[in-house]
Amino acid sequence: MGEIKGLEMDEKKLSSPKPPCHGGLCIEIPDYSMKQDFGPMLNMQHVTRLRGVGVKNLLPLAESSQKKEALQKSIEKSKIGREDTAERAALTEELAALRKKKEQLKAEIDKYRECDPDVVEEMRQTNKIAKEAANRWTDNIFAIKSWAKRKFGFEESRIDKSFGIPEDFDYID
Image (cartoon, rainbow, N blue to C red; front, side):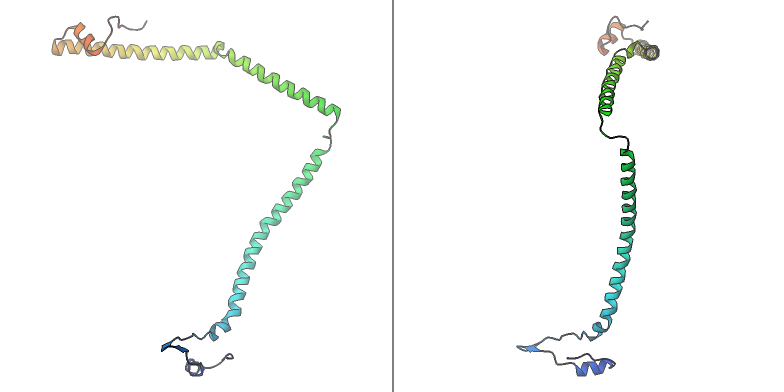
């Protein structure tokens, strides 16, 4: 069947063939003539959209290829004067030996870090703070023991035994 253009909807229905029937069941085949008119336009929209995506993808590709070329040129420039020679090999070996010696000296310095005056002073300050904190807690324990004696009339030895306080418990000097 050929395309029917310029006809009204009712005329298209009249001119379309009757639906095929199989065993009393009729199947109606839709008329695709309308889609044929819009098909090329839909395809062009799709192609145009794909072209836009392609252009978007081509811009980073072009930038990347320019960067690659620039990097290749800089690599070639940096290779000038770095050819493998006996002098360069000797300097490379000397550099490796010096780096190894540097690591050994760092390890030796780390061994004696405890003797550093700044580290020693920091340890003194830390010890002073810890001593003050321990004496503050000892003072709190004595205050609680005193309160328990007054409030409940317990003996000091019984309080020490109940709470696991040693007999030689005292302030740190």
